[in-house]
Length: 240
Image 1 (tube, rainbow, N blue to C red):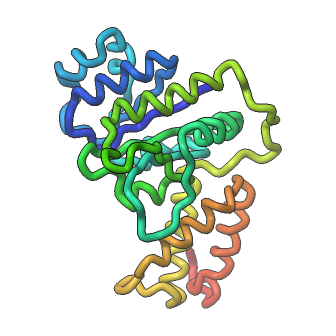
Image 2 (cartoon, helix red, strand yellow):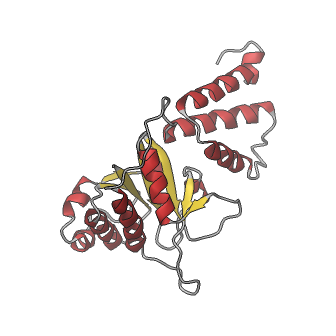
């Protein structure tokens, strides 16, 4: 089973090295770094302690979308409550869901910066929240510790593959979802339904709705076809 660990905006290079070590302990190798403050760095190498090959193979990208473009299911780790009700899972359930979705394509777990965690924009790219139960009076976890927990749960499943067959139509990827959301926002704006000067939380709520639906490639194509047919410029005889 192939699982991707993604670190967004990591400020301390030692945490990157410790994450690489946690991954290698549990047999995971796919590490992607989104805009790390310092990398490569001697502190990352020192903390990797035998997992330098994971660091050397790590991909560094500028934006989270680049790390998720080929993913069909994404969990975002967060300890903070959010204004909008997000679906969430604890590590064991999350690992099981990732293993199930991995049959159809790449899956990932995303971790945010040490102090602030993932932003709401980052979580818009995720299918679910990963929450790790902790003592209520001391809930802060080091990133590498959190990575170790989910990697351990994934490791437990490696000899217990889920009983599932590959779907006839694969799930939509992160890139396909993002193209659809941009198309949807454009049509809603042109129609006047969405006011770009006062959007409130409309697009975020719509993202949540479609994530819950777990769209496949055909369903995304159907929705985009509907949007194309409804585009004001096309209805007025203009070209697109």
